[in-house]
Image (cartoon, rainbow, N blue to C red; front, side, top):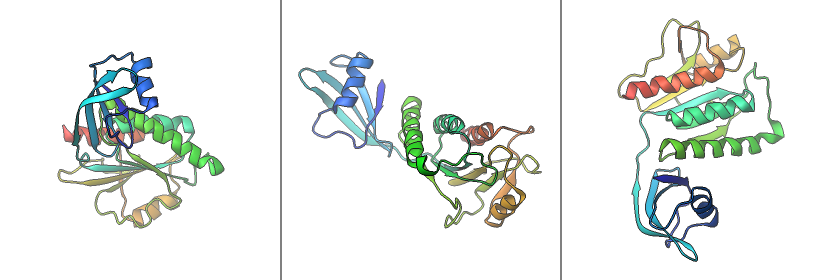
Length: 228
């Protein structure tokens, strides 16, 4: 069944021109074909297409999907846009709930006045990755100059550190998990101490030293593995 992201979901059985164009001109769907629309906030609509003068939705069915558990927040230090796009796409497929970007001491990029445009680009990538992977939810993507301020994390906050003696493990029953991943060159010693003072537990994500984008994916993949 072909899917499309649409927020808000349509009312009155009418389909907007952009979504209709994708279904009819790009995917070449025909009258009677079944489609699925999702708004990225847990609401799904399934329907059949009617393609006469105006594309319409027939036999609509709507239902809600609860957020995946545990909810996982990735605190990703700024890296190149190419790597952020890769991280956003792959981590969305792996169940990411929220992506918080921040500038670390060793971050080699600073989007400055281009920040909003970059965030919008990443949000579109997350929407498409959610569509492709069959998710009902699209992760939230934000930038924060102080990523942990006011968060109040408990035992579910971790920081990737290749020198840590403890491996990353998701305990049964956890509902919220946060993972801090540094840029190329990792976090500075001062940043490590600051995050640890805010409750982050240093963990090793793999036996080897990982690239920042590989570390993010590894954390998400291990979380998914714990759900199987």
